[in-house]
Amino acid sequence: MELSHDLLSGVRQIADHIGKSERATYHLIENHRIPVFRLGNKIHARRSELDAAFRSAASNG
Image (tube, rainbow, N blue to C red; front, side, top):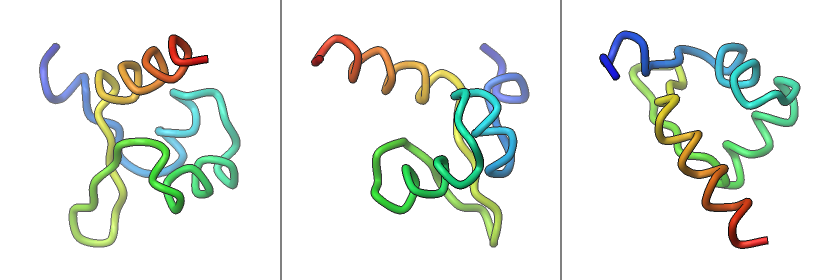
C-alpha cells in the first residue's frame, strides 16, 4: 500500500477508520492502545498498523 493511502492524519480520520468516537480514540491513544505518531502537533497513524493491531487484539481474545 502506498504511504499516501496508508496514512491517516488527525484523530477524526483515525476514529472513522477504527469505528470509534473521537473521544474513545483519544482515550486509546493516551493509554498507548493503538499505534500512532506525531508530526508537529498533529497525530497520525497508518491504516496497516491499526488493522494489524486490531487483528492481534482480536486473536488474543
